Length: 235
Image 1 (spheres, rainbow, N blue to C red):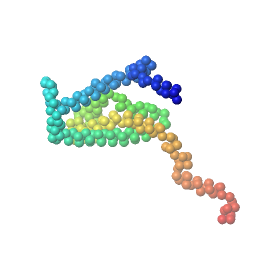
Image 2: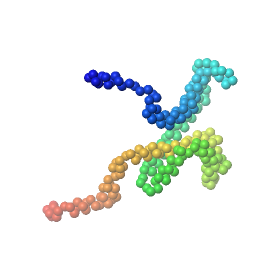
Image 3: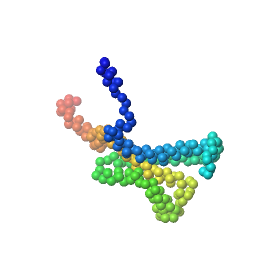
Image 4: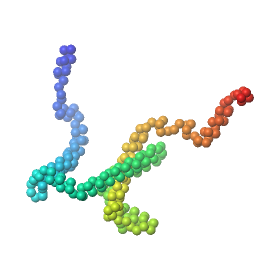
């Protein structure tokens, strides 16, 4: 008992810089730039914006604290509720569409084919493409004068549509672009989950893999062949 007590008292908590002496500083080096960038470009603007929402500031003079005055004016603005409705519309439509498309693609790509790697890479490319490049491509697709989408509609005899300038069609156009971009990454997640399912669950047994008509036709014949002749003569 005395030895255990003495050993417990000798164990002391190690300081935070002990990891550097043990050669475990690689994690700090790799994660440090990301943490610093998050603090500077994400957390700091959020905290500063929250503070400025309680002040009156015209950039030229120092901020003046006014309490909840800005929030009270915001609740009286009709554009606030319109913006909230548009945000909910975008969130529900984009998440639902991306999830449905991702599940369908994951099921289709969960096959053992020779060229399945090419298709998986092809559908994952939008997830690693720059947002600037995606915006430029879709802006060209939606262009009223020489866009690909309007060119296709023109071949069907439909007049060009101002996809990004029409208040009714602008949001569905942006939602379609968002679904296209996020479907690839979500497909990888769903595909990883499907590949973790055992093959014994997803693959049907051999008896059920036969054609229904053949199975029903061969079963009576097998039972007929296995019955002894004496049972038919006495029965």
